[in-house]
Image 1 (tube, helix red, strand yellow):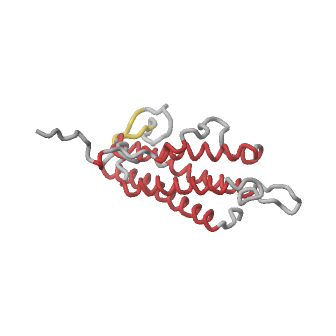
Image 2: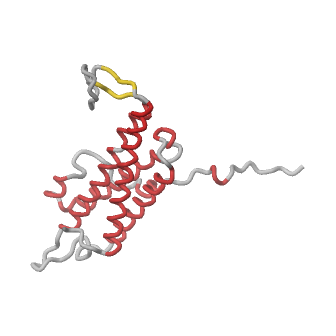
Length: 205
């Protein structure tokens, strides 16, 4: 009798996460990105952006299988977020290969390199970053089914609350919509940034 190889169905083979492309990028940490880097450490902006790319890409993973069991975000939305952000990251990396004098660091009339475009890009990327991170809170609360409150029953942040309030089905639905809305806004901003880079439009208002 012929032995049939024990091969899992193709659709059950886990696809490699796009975040795997960025595993060797700089890690997140205090002072790695933000306003101070943009204002005082121009030479660290590229590493700062790469650290953001790695961090955001890893956070997007939680909305994809099997993590969708936690937040139950529609998978077409999650895949759109993952693919869109990866496309944006690859566009950024492609353009940075031009080096100084290129799109992100053009030469000014005085002969010096301008950092304004790459600063503007980092600010716009930060908006995407913030939305994806902030979306986690309502989705986490919805999945947990309760929120931390103070002694008067007001919802609070942190761990010093008086107790928890159990959420109704309607409240859970509202929280899910809040999180999904932020992810949709992140996708819109990603698409806008992709369009700017693709057309080489000005990043500076």
